[in-house]
Length: 463
Image 1: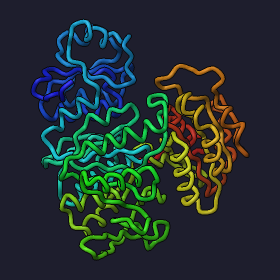
Image 2: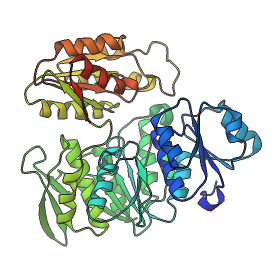
Image 3: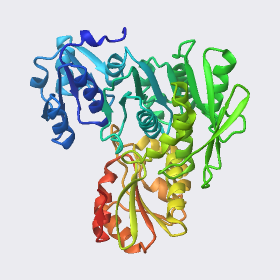
Image 4: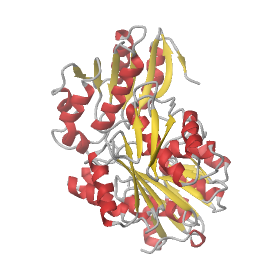
């Protein structure tokens, strides 16, 4: 299939328009003057916001919703049995994956595509906030709402488009970036890829999308990303900037866990150092900031201005997001759903807790991921003092016989399986003491428990 052209799409209908990724593309198309409609399973604030922008939206899925549309946009979560998709197929309408629709929306721009097994949302958000702080006005599409931006997508006045590039289903190969960021490469989404090697190959194909004058920004501290960057550099296919704490990095992160954190920029045989001050905790976030810095410098932002602008980044929704506090206990929520992400989130929580205890309510995401990484999840979760592991959130998957949350808890030192969410909330609130942190973790509906925990503590919610 040849790349879609925005002008040829006509009226565009989004199946599942309320999702973070889908609503981002819908927002961009509305700003570009494309007639947009969409449906989602339930009424939500997201649907109402899109309606206010001019979209025709409806709660529930039905064949009538696509009666007068020309193009139907779906995500990998939409099954062929969906009535809107079934009608679109029968009528021969153009059906695009969300990534193909986004590719059409940003075809005329200079594209910065941010990929990686972890850290995509935060890094994409940092780049966007940084560029705005430096006086540029990029378009952007991000998989979460960013408090500093107020939305998850917008159409800017410049010709720069910053997009989160999702590798989970291979759809990031539909983009044509001029700058590509790869934060890390690890085995994940094996329900789609099958093998770890297939994951690595997909990232090699992603890097190969860059033109001869393009730039790959790769993390030198991650084995998979470093191997990718060095391989591209050896081929001479495009330029490569490595970032990280590694002494050979072009953008080197210095003292990331200390007050004197800085970024050292190597260019023209000289090194310049710029202070790094972040509002978000964790070495992983300092690495994300280094990637954002490298992109901004490539786009012409003065290094000192780029480093200073990073101080305005206050996080993205569900990325160690403060939910409120009570009785001296702070409550945070994090989207982490891979062992490496869980380890990073709990390491950051340990830093923020400053010697106090960390309590976790964790919801595994996907049966296949739980099966593949149960031992790794157990090891990461054991960084906390208490852990309640909820039932697996199935998302797009059907249950797998024998795969339950107890595959994780059986391997833990001090975690327990808790199928009752209310009981998990009550226990966390009862165990916590002043100075402690309670963290809800996972990519499913566990996020809703943050407010319940704050209420159990008798506290107030974050504004």
